[in-house]
Length: 69
Image (cartoon, rainbow, N blue to C red):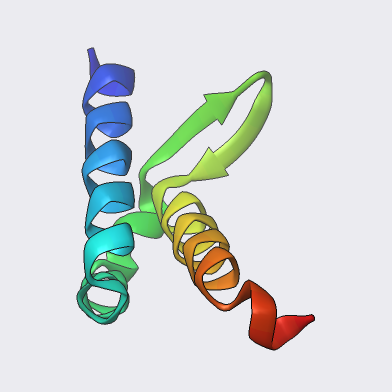
């Protein structure tokens, strides 16, 4: 049950990141205690905070692809 809730939260965070990246970063800062929420992805241990940072970075890199290259 908890893995379903984590997946739903990360999908909502992804949608927020795509729409408003600045709000997603502010939510990331507010959610710093989320490092205590642990889960496994294909056998790899991760935390909710790591997943949020990864989502925000990937969305930022996709939006600024031309500037990066």
